[in-house]
Amino acid sequence: MRLVLLGPPGAGKGTQAKLLQEHFRIPKISTGDILREAVKDGTSLGKQAKEYMDRGELVPDAVIIDIVQERLAAADCRDGFLIDGFPRTVAQAEALEEMLARRDLALDGAISLRVPRKELVKRLSGRRTCRQCGTMFHIRFNPPKKDLVCDNCGGELYQRDDDREETIEARMEVYDRESAPLHEHFRDLGALYEVDGSKTTDQVFQQILRKLGKAA
Image 1 (tube, rainbow, N blue to C red):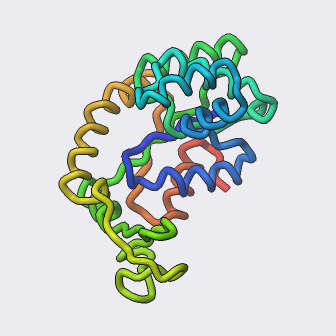
Image 2: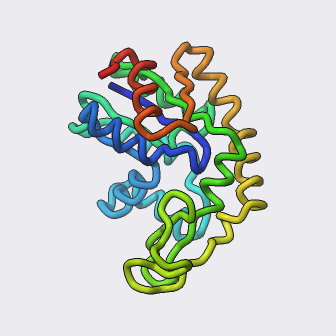
């Protein structure tokens, strides 16, 4: 199974990615993981990426695409993979399709988790992070035993700037604007599977399996 996972911040991609990884026994790949691994291994592409990262610049599309291609050529991706965070543009999607086509392969689907904006704001704005150990809590879904105190180390819990409502709204607008052409691209290919991500974790997972024709 070769899948791409799409969705805005707070849609639950991380949770569903883990479930899909276990169900299909395929590796979960994220561009962040790929970049860190390439830099750590000191590959030629990793060295190129590191130069941009060290300067605080975005890694160009061409380098990202080459790194993804290198990762997908690994033995553990032979029987499938799940990508989170790539592609982010139509150009990247086309590059992914081309690299698969050269191996006579194709994507089985692009899963898009849809969650109402108000629910996303609730999910993200409710997060609280420990200043000392970095553990994350949620005032609604995973509250600490004592208000604003970390269960693990007793540190102070605070709300990060990027979890404030006004910042979240801006992030959502950027995501909607940038992702619209990508969704249309996969829809035109007949490869887009839209799922209601506002349901429970298991309900969302079962929706995905049904969409893929692999209901348990």
